[in-house]
Each structure stands twice: as structure tokens, then as C-alpha cells.
Amino acid sequence: MDIFTTGTGGLASPPSGDEEETGLTASCPCKQLLVSSLGEAQHLQAGAMGVYKLYSTYNGRPSYHGPHSNRLYFLNTGWIVGATIGAPVGFVHNGSQVRRNTYFL
Image 1 (cartoon, rainbow, N blue to C red):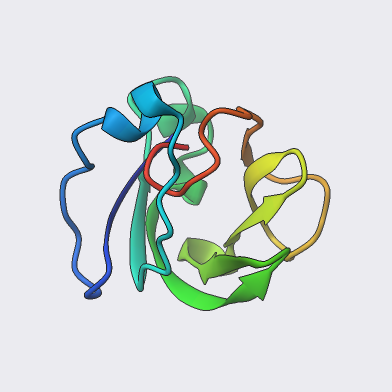
Image 2: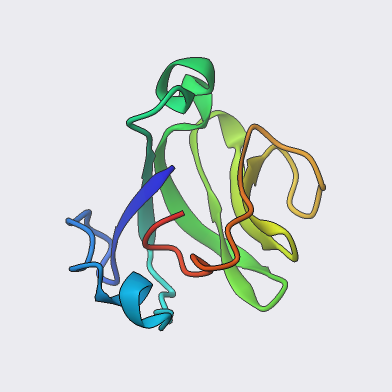
């Protein structure tokens, strides 16, 4: 799952990738995120793809409202797109412990 963000509400390209190499994470209370995939999720979970707008916070991180009333939020196991904030199951999940920011999920 790929997320492209800007803090101004528009959509933009991802950062250079240095965050992944250095292990640094970005603080991104971005107003909008674009969830997309170049893998099988683009076909199998097409309803979870699209623009997500800042909605609330959950687990000390921003959470987002998106297409089909889906939510994007952070659990202790990683970022997840699901129907209800806080639910341990959803449509798309990224459990990577390296990518804990919203630039590259």
C-alpha cells in the first residue's frame, strides 16, 4: 500500500525515501492521503483505495475517513484500512514495524 501526502490538503509525490534508510519517521498530521497499490491490493481491495481525509486521532496518531466510509488508522500491529476505527480486522493492513509513518505503508 502506498500513501502520498501533503500537509496542505493536496496530493503530492512521496518523499525521497531517506526516512526508510535512516529509520526516521515523519510526523504527518496530513489533511489528505492517497491510498494506492501497485500490487494485488489494487484489484482485490479496490474499494479500500482512494483519497482519505483527516478525521480524528486514534492511538495517538491521525486517523482518516475515506471511500465507502472506510477508515485508515494505526493499531499496535501497524496501519489498517477498515470499516470501524479500532477494529482489529480490516481490508488492508501493513504490519511493517519499519514503516510506522504514513508516507509508505
